[in-house]
Every structure is written in C-alpha cells, then in structure tokens.
Length: 638
Image (cartoon, rainbow, N blue to C red):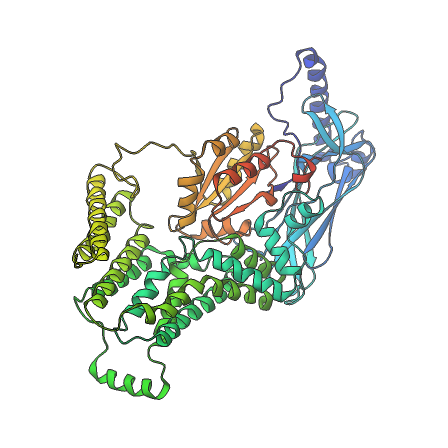
C-alpha cells in the first residue's frame, strides 16, 4: 500500500495534565458518532442528516479521480469548510476484486505538504482544511484504454469535535491508450528525486539515460557496463564453459575457428538476454527465474559433468556414424560446423548461469516496461550483453594461438578444462543443495585438479610449480571433506571450529503481498522503518550481500532500529510473482526501504550487489524519520 508520510497516531504518549479534557472530548466524539449513526439509520431520510450538526463523511469529504495522460492520474479531495483530512491517512491502491488482475502498478503518490495541527490524541499532524490534489504515476504495458479500479483511503475530522473512522472510497479511472513507441515519462522515483537534486539510485540514473540520452552514447555506455558485469560471479562461469567447447574441438583448432565458435556463443547469449529481458519487462515477471527450477539445474549440472568426463577421456560424445557423414557433407558445403549447437549452448548459459539482476539490467527492463519502447530497450540489452561477451571473445581469439597443436600437453589442457566444468556443475548445484553437501562436492574438482597437476612432468620450473599447486589444491580438497564432516559450510573457511563466527542481520520471513502488508502495518504502528530484502537461493549476488554486506558492523548500526524483512522468491510461485509485480521488481537481489510513517522510499532501492560502506550510507538515509529535502520522496514531509 502506498501512503503519504506523517506520524502514526498509535502509541503516542498523552500528557497526564490533558487526560481529563481529552477524555471529555473523546466522549463527545463518541456521542456525536452515535447520533450520526442513528440519523443515518432513521427512516426520515437524508434531509434530517443534512440538518444535523455534522455532515456525513461522503459530503464532508468528496473524492474525485481523473486521468492525466496514459501513465498518470490525479485524485482531488474536496474538503467542506469546518472539516479537515489527515495527510498520513491518505492511501492509494488498485483492487480489481477477487481473482481479477489489472496490468498496472501505482508509483509513489505526490502528496503536497499539509498544515501542522497539534492533536490532543495523535500529537503533531499534517492536515488539509481545503481542497488538495494528489498525482500518482502509473506503470503499465503498451495497450489501449485501461480502466483502473482505484481504492482511496482517507480519514478526517470536524473542527467542532467529531472524528470520522478511517474509510475506503472505490473509484474508477480510465487511462487513455499507451503508445508502444511514445515514452510514458520518467520513473516516478527518478523524477521526484531528480527534481529536488537529492539522492537518485544507480538504476534510476541509468533508466533516465536510456530514456533521454542519445542512442549512440547510450549503447556505448551499456556496452562498457556489460564489460564490467563480465567479471562478476554471475558471468564468470561462462568462461570455462566456452573454453571447454573450444578445447573439445581437438588439437587442430585454429584461431579463426576458435573465435568463430566464441562469436556464435556470445551472439546466442546476447540474443537470448535481449529477448528474455523484453519478455520479462512485458510480462512483469522473471523469465530467467523459470529456469532456476531444481530439476532444470540438476539436468544442466549433469550435462556439465558429462562434458567434463568427456574431457577426461572416459568417453567420446559423438553422433551416430550415419549422421556424421551427412553433417560432414553439410559442413563442407557451409563451413559452419557446430555453430548452431554452440549458439544454443550460449542461449542456455544466459538463462541458467547469469540469473542475477544488476542495476543496468534493471534500468533497461524498467524503461521497456514503463515506455513500451522495445527497440530502444532491446538495443541497450543487446549492447550490454555484447560487452559481457568481450572476455569470451578474447578466450576464442587466443585459444588457437595459445593451445598447442599436438602432444601430451593438449590432453592436460583438456583435463584442466574438465576440472573447471566440474566446478561449474558444483557452483550450479549449490543453489539447490544444503551448504554442507555443497562443501563436500567442492572437494571433488579440487582433488581431481590436484591429480591432473601432479601428473605433469617436473623436469622444468613450470612443471614443479604445477606440482606444488597440485599439492596445495589437494590439501584444500581434503580440508573441505573434513570440514563437511565436522559441519562446515564455507569453502573459504572449511573447518567451522577454526572459522571466525560472523553474525549477519536477522531477518523475518514474509510470504506474498498479504504477509508483507501485515508486517508493514505493524511497523508503521510502532513508528519503525522497514527494510525488505528480495532473495533467492539461485541468486549469487544475494549470497554475496549476506556474506560481505549484511555482516558489516556499519551496516548493522545503520539498521539498528529497522524491521528487517526477507521475501524468499526461490520458488517463484504465484505468491512470489504477485509480490514482485506489485513493486515492479524483475528479480533479486533487490532491497526496498520504508520510512517510519509507512511510505516506501523508492529512490533508495538497491539493485544488485553493493559493498558494505556504500550500502550503510544509503540505509542510514533511507531509514531516517525526517530525511532532508535532498533525500525526500514524493509525499514525504519536507
């Protein structure tokens, strides 16, 4: 639920000196409410109600909603003289009814500042004695006219002493058609924060660049960002996959052939990332998460194990002889070889290996979802994917030159690539297996790699260095086996008794939108800020945040008074998808913050891995009760 800011009335202490006047006023309010209820139920009609001292709430506070374009609506509150509305009680949600779905989400409402009023019961509040208009951005896919079933929450009082109970008004607003090419305007959080010169998250800055920047500059920028993403744990596993494919070509591989195979792999990855991104933005859900099912991960890991065993020479993967002759003839005619298979491998790797969400990817998906500009957004995704593939192209360009053309050394290189493929298989299985079992599995590639390195001749300095490396790798593998038996979980600190215990943040699990709403309401009632962490077991960057960021003391201090919630979307079931769609989130890791008054501070959202020092600074600002103007969100108290 999107709310404005302001103190929550529940829990404010009352001054003892004011307890009797306050009680007297409270009794008069109850009496007035009772009289109003009797008048409303009497058969005399509305005329008698209008003649009473207090107006019914529908006449004291009139609410109207109108569209201000395809992606924005306005709600007008008309306040009768002698009455006032509480600012912090204004809320705006979409509710189409049981089982119905509306393909739109509301952004942060822009609620003007009200006038301050000292309430005997609720303390210092912001109220409106006159008409006020609230604008709300709407995120939607390109479509025709769209009807929004809007639910408006409000609460007000009469100056004469009557306080009305909180209520909901149901309105319908028809937004005009949204063009597939016209921009629907900047994201609401980016606009608001940027207008005040305050904090703007990295993903919002990149989204503004995609939307408004010159296309050549945008493509060059995202190509460079993709090159940086290539060195993250989400992309690096592709290097041994491609290296294994090239090494599997045998000793006759040339530089040209290796580069061509690499280019096919990278193009398969880039096209898949682009199409999957466009589909995710259009559908409002994670396409890559569909490929993180345990059985799919297990099958893919077995495939890597089979490739590794083939590298070790245990068997040869080949097609039947009858098909080999036909493929040879086609190869001679087209000179293409197995390019289609390599491109398909790149496509599968893109969906299964690189499942992390980073700010550049989130920005591109957000722009596609909000503006419907598939060409511009898709071009950005393709350029970023090509940047991610540059190290892979470098592997291909050097493979034919660095790999020997024949000899025993070539067999050793193939075995080393086999070890790397085994490591990729374990890395994938770590998403679905317990940490203790994963630690034991990490010992397998370590011990096999130790055997491969020890088998090299020690006649040269390089051979002796390889043998020493093999001894160290073997010792590490044995240590991981012992650590797994002792209950260890961390490959970097296998023996739990020797590892330094580092306590991370303690989260409270939430499931679905209903569970989150309950926690947010409880936190707002207690006047506490909230941090929500979207997490998944298959998300490498999520585990990086847990290991390196959430264990930092500065981060713990910055969140000392906050309610810490975690939404585990590993299953990607209907409840998880509904929660992600509600906030326009395309996947983990994403972290959202709510202020003590219950309003989300969208410009402080964190997407992707962030180092502890930077995250602590953002968390400190996002959880403050009264942020300065530079860090305020639409509708927050200045």
